[in-house]
Length: 467
Image 1 (tube, one colour):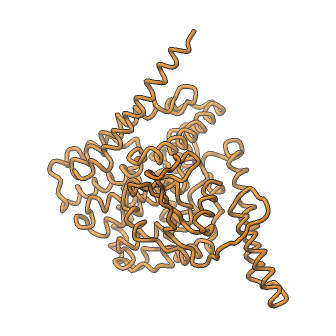
Image 2 (cartoon, rainbow, N blue to C red):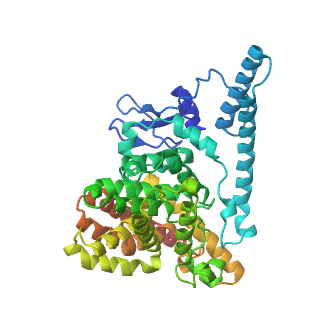
Image 3 (cartoon, rainbow, N blue to C red):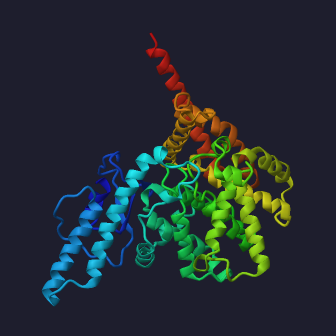
């Protein structure tokens, strides 16, 4: 409702993209918690991407649970009345549009029901049947053709402070296309635009409707990778093919994630654990799904490469995606520590380890973002963790300690993770790229201080309330 009111104030349509800036020019979240403005501290509201097919809506009538559907219904009725007056009948295209809106509403209702019952009714081995059907290829192609991404947004996309919560999933697909285009992949690898769009949409369809490891997480990881490529000037340090490997690995690194980690897969003896012999079952599955998508001719962005180029990309993607298994974290980090002081961008082994590190950093980079962006992701992650521990208890499986809702708190989970996982990893990468100090290392240190203070305050409060 809040965003809808801002759209009305800006005289923007439902498919326009709004951004709000403070007096310093920084992007601020549009939310009910927005601080009141004043003469000295005012906000600037801009339409940064326009829907070329939209028309200004003069008046809205009727009630519904969603402003989006209110607008759609009003526009449909207005168009139907006008066309009927002009030609005496409703054109097929209007009927089709009306049918699509109704279908979209039904799909959302089904998804909402599935989200509430997934733990009880679905096998945690794979929940591909829950992949969101809210977007259709036609609707995404319409978004591709109608949205214009401004230069300001393109530049903001290259930074770690990018706020994913301000963007719809269809818009994220457009931004992913921008990443592939601005890194010149389409020209360098002879990728047809339609094939890229089909590939991105198919990737979207293979991310499940779960709290954390979903398409928005996929977008965030890919966007962080994209930003790091620009910040570290890797375009001039690595070959274009290595950049394609890293960005596409980030995009595909959690495909068809079921919301239950490797420990669960192995303890529950799921199909994935049996298929991959308990060796990184999820990561192996993500790789298999990725190349299953690429095996479809209409989605194969690698089809115009030579055999050697394809083998190089396939091998690189497999290595990068398998590296996201946290069970291998120390092994990979220790290799990088040894190489880092004498790192050589012409050394094949050095480049392979760096590519793994870049994907790993991107995968767990939420705390490098502003707290308003990062903290909601922690809530999503804990929800997924608690779902797993609840299922483990129900099935009589060993309960993963850091996922037990009865033992884990938000601040305690983050202080340990930041102190023992994030900081050592981010520090080593910053030694190789000092420019990352202010962009990712300082924000992570700030996050550690924030959660440490929160943990301390929580403990003091517990002591106070004890009889």
